[in-house]
Length: 169
Image (cartoon, rainbow, N blue to C red; front, side, top):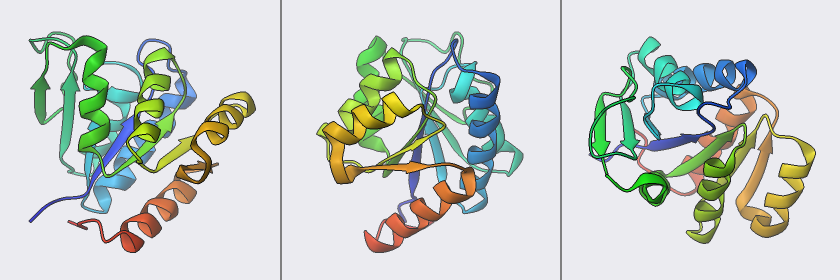
């Protein structure tokens, strides 16, 4: 049976400690629902923190890596998909996720949000500044939601999963 895959996207090296803490908590909450956490798979930033949180809750994680090897990949990625595609692997992250949650912002993260909107994916912005929110809501309209906490994000995901009949577990 298909599993619900939650894409948690955000910066690597430039992630703030707050971004990482939120990503850890969200990864844990997603795993507690029995859902899969998918990230860019690297060993730092939001990617690593979200998968570490999911592992804390005994969840399954997927890391979609930019290289053709697992160098700098997170130890918390259960399934490592080596693409050799660099940043072009962002489309795999987006298309493989049922819903996208974005924590923090960097150039690669912005490209993932844009790809998600172009692919008609629901995007939840978490821990974003007002300029980022206005920009993505302007181009994404109803596809973009803004959350102020992990709990609020989880309620939005649960509602989306229920309404859109996404596989639950």
